[in-house]
Amino acid sequence: MDSELDSNTEELGEPVETVPAGPGDRLRSAREEKRLELSHIAAETRIPVRHLQSIESGDFDNLPSRTYAIGFAKTYARSVDLDPEEIAQAVREELADGHAQHSAMAGGMEPGDPAKLPSRGLAWFGGFAAFALAVGVIAFASTYFGAGANPASLIANTEEATDEEALADASNPTQGEGSNAPAISGGQVIFTALEDLQWVRFYDDGGEVLFEAGMATGDTFEVPEAAVDPRINTGRPDLFSITIGGQSVPKLAEEPITLGDAPISADALLARSDLAGAAQSVN
Image (cartoon, rainbow, N blue to C red; front, side, top):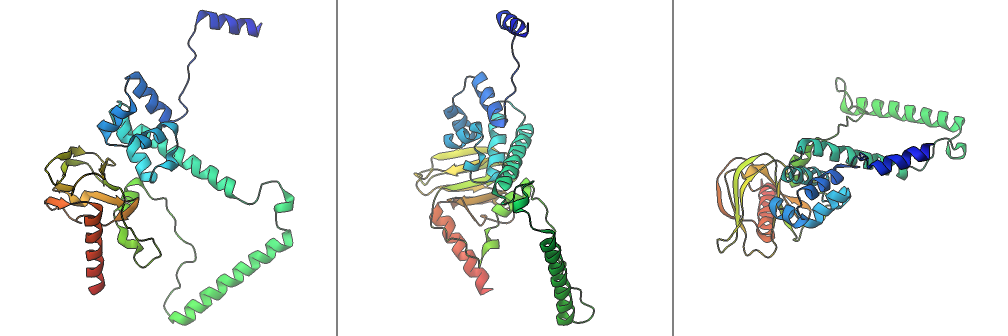
């Protein structure tokens, strides 16, 4: 009887409602409804086609970072008349789900497997050892720092960084000075808007305009590698984070100033970074 009902439903041609699996499917469906090619979206948003393909397929790990995944998706959503905030939230949820699945797969212990769980005696011994260690650390700190000084908390305060904090961290590469971070030698130069900008102009040495318009938060511009001595003209250089080959370099400025004819090639930006680092070491 059920099979007959199913066949009758198919013969009547009743539509079967399908819900896209994720934000990438929704973006692709909206683009196809408008009969637009990915190359058109790439030209309008200045996002490379390979990144758009990763977004549509849900491969957000192929994007430079979580911040880029959210920013690119919001820009894509605007170009196909979808709600950018709704798409951004969906991307955040997919990234969170992917991180949870990765953490579960990376764990070495499986629930319900007694062979992989420590014995009760070993667990008690471990807890006692941890308590004794904590008491020893507190006693040492009290003795070393003297009376009246409290030892630092043994409990670390951890909070998930917001999108704005991630963008700010990306624009402040000096935090890694003195670490083992690899030296930057060159690569693709990408500017990312940290806030909404009224106007910015990118152009090359011959005066050819590479990009000239306002930019929204999270919008990016990839400086063409073939551009000859690319330059920037803006009144808010402090609202741009910059990466070279996926690694952050210092902003052009930390406060609102008018920059005209400022070079932004990889070599020029790296030279500015070296000068800033030398000045800080002298001070």
